[in-house]
Image (cartoon, rainbow, N blue to C red; front, side):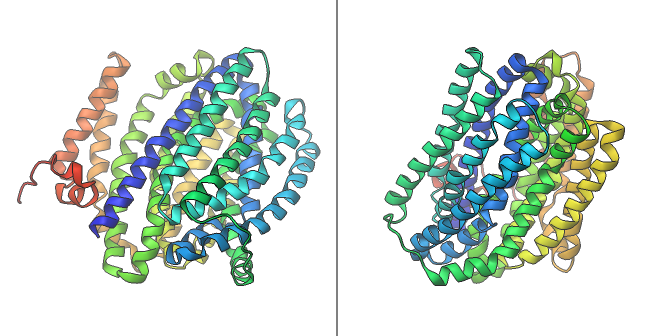
Length: 484
């Protein structure tokens, strides 16, 4: 399993590095936007993007994990899957674009939100082809091309967006820039596919089409429900509060979304690996699950603890003093990282073992809970109610997963030893609570030192596992593991 583990580690590290760099770059744009257009401008911009991501989930039909799974098992089918899935996706995207525009106009939003509806709808067409092409690149484990294209697209959007804001343009121009760069990404994505995967030619396959149509109801419903579960709070807030409230809440959520790229990247890397191991090596499959859970907790727990303890200075630094109300929401929503990270590993387990129907059940339950929580909490607590709704529904999502996997999950969690990184993260909270007078860089460095020392003492990270996962050139740099 050594080569497989190293490849998964490399792909995860690459995805994490670049997908953290992408939203960090976006923070320059968001920071400028908040100062130029205020909370209402940020609220309008994020509301439009929220519509895009939700409708994009509908247009994808949820077929991207199916495409990755099938192509990872038979790489010769890559061209047939791309052409056949794109033919369905483009048709659905065109219809969805019209529905999106009609929905935004019927909802009564004013100003730039209504004016930019056509641009958001137009961006759905390239996005669906990009999604399916990336699914195949993931199956080929050529993730580096995905992250380079994403980095280029985001860098272009940030630079052009900053220029537009400094020239006095508003939300409409920013959405136009978003749409243009979607089409540029599509052009380069297809070029990479042609050179790295298979020559581009029209190879519509009726057999693949039947498989996609047969699988679309389950996979599509899963993705739609999961996307609504993650984003329905913004829609409810937009109708029960105002754009300023959306601005404060989405500012807090922005930092959560940046940290969430870690479990998302791990899922992208391990899903094709899990798909192969489930068929060929059950023991390796179980071990890969346990290691993935432990190391995702090692990565996420210090982020959640550190962000919670430093919420106020981080919000002031990134968004300005006027966004101080976002700090309490950030303290709540950042803890969603922990159940979300565990849940992503379990989703990989379910999809790789052809049990996506369980994931559908769990998503439906969590969506219903999220809607109910927001309907109760928003009128009383405003955007803080959204934060609590996100955290509680994400915890419920994980609890339901564990319930449906109850006959097999306990040994996996026991082997993962998640209590050790949890204790080390608790020490970060204690350190930050005792050092409010220290400068921010010293508090961050001290917290990292405390966490690293406790990980070493508790042996939450083992040299033997790192030797298994790290590239060969780094293995020689590791110290010898102490014998018990």
